[in-house]
Length: 370
Image 1: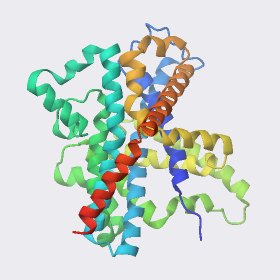
Image 2: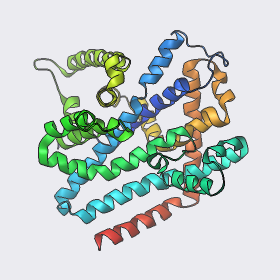
Image 3: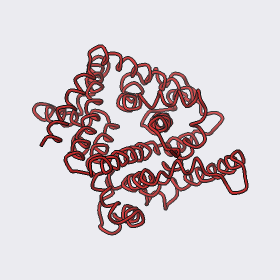
Image 4: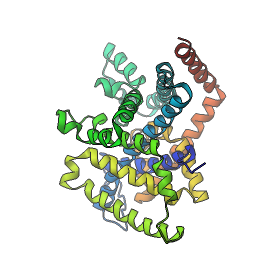
């Protein structure tokens, strides 16, 4: 059997993406960095801020990985179940359930924390019946889709994640019928062809399309196993590393160019792909680093959901008290990892997994036996 991009490889890349996300939010938010006397040495402040803005690549990485994993599941269903709709429906419902069931414990945690450390946070939900509706939609991950307030801005991504899960079976079917060239081409030119507004889904649609194609053709494994003719693997890796550096730097320049600012769908699909390939090819073979990134990958959802409460909503002064830009990011990362481990231990003690598994089984029986 040939090499493949495995679940552990996915965790490794997720770990790298979550570091990029923390870095991005630390230095592109409304925080008054000068007030905390943050040191950006050996770089200029503008350089670190631009690097942090480029690090929004994390969104495209998660979108690509989701599309990749769902595509592999759909291919397996085709082989084992003939792609019957009831099995696809179950897989879709199960994925949405896993998103929500992973979100809810964190939601309750941050609600409790905000009662203690940031009671004014609840103003975003307004008051009366409106507050109840807004809270319910946020609890269901639908706030961004419905245009209602999220308790914290970063939760907008939950809406995109749910839409992607729902859309992937349709996108995969379209890809299978019309082929990669037409499918990927349409994903890039859809706004120009239809005049559609550049929503989050449209912006990251090309990343989904590339995820489907790469999963179907196992392209990432091909990149890792590739050897330049008449050279050994070591020399190939050196040449590839130089090429990767040039391409990543080019993506950095593209991000802030006039073209990049007007074609977000290109920047946010090509750049994540470059980062994923670089992490997979060059970092996934380093034992200790890979182990740490995979640990972060396992906790990436929790960290994504509550990190901004620790960074800015609850303990902003503490978070930025470490002064050095890299140390601020590192301490926030370790804080978030520790809190996530505690949350997972609490879920284990409460046997939360038994509840989520019970619901999954009910969903399976409802769909498969229908």
